[in-house]
Each structure stands twice: as structure tokens, then as C-alpha cells.
Length: 216
View (tube, rainbow, N blue to C red):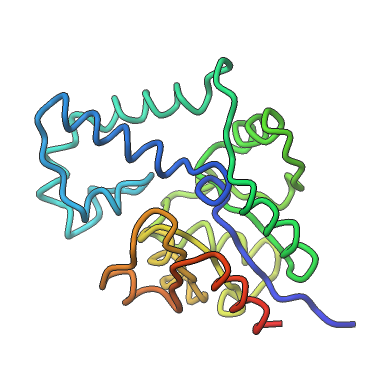
């Protein structure tokens, strides 16, 4: 019997594009309070422990007063019962395809119950037992905790996992987990930091698909 290779997807960004939602909220906050946010911050802010990021220490002191406000606005958006969740159908179709060839798992920055509600509202059927939340570990990405937890619970060697992400935090976490982090330029083009941490990087989804087919 052939054992399937492990593929891990960051669900929030790949399907629901929540990275873009929070990034836009930060941009609105910056405009309202006349803050100047660097590109490094906008690429690295997403659900990260910013106070632990050496490159962002100075900027963290500037934006710290607004972190709670941003998170409140973000939670209001993604939890709103009046807002129908939108999703990327092309990406969803790829998940269905990849699930046939890979041992597929998902990572979310939401609580499991919250992502379950989002999936139900969007009428997307995914195995909830294959979804792991960064809320279940001490340190969120860019630390490797969530990937190491997944590997431990599923008895998978981290260096055999292929992880697809569209953020700097994601490929950093993959690198620290000793996994193969693939970067998809869904929101931003790969800069040098991303190239340093990613095992491979791609500008289009079809390029990722071709790469994954070669793995098989």
C-alpha cells in the first residue's frame, strides 16, 4: 500500500483570504491615527507575537496601542452573522483535487468552533478533525508550534511535511519546523526574507499544482 505524502494548507488565507481583511484594517487604523507602517510590518503582522520579532521591536512600540482595536474589528468582521463569508472557488477546487492525492491537513488562526461556523455558512465541507488551530498552542506563527503539534498528534515526521502558505509568518514557521514551506504569492510578491525561509516559492497557483504533481 502506498502511503500518501502530507500536505498542510493555511485554511484562513487560502480559502477565505482573511490575511487581506486584517491587512486592510491595519491600513485603515494607520490612516485614522496617522501612523506610518512599514512593508515589513504589513507582511508580518498576521496573528504573530510581534513583541518577539527583533526586526519589529521599534515599530511594535508604535502600533501596540492599536493591536486590541484591530483584533476587535477583525473579529467583528469574520464573526458577523450579517456578513456572508466569501471564498476563493479556484482554491477550493484545488483542495478537493489535492485531497485525493495527499494526506491533507489544515491550519487556522481561528478557534475551531469559529472556523467550523465559517465553513458551515459558506457551505464548505471539510473534515473538522483535520483542522488544527494556532489557538491550541502557546506560540502562533512565525513560531513552529502548530506544525510540530500537528506532526506529533498525527505521528508525522516534520521533515516529510509540505506546507503551503502565502505569508512570511507561514514560511518562517515551516522553516523552523524543518518542513518544506512553499510560498504562494497570493497577496505579495516574494521578497528576500521570504526567499530565505521558503523551500520554494511560486507566483501562480498552477505553478504550485505542477510542483505538487512532481512530488507524486
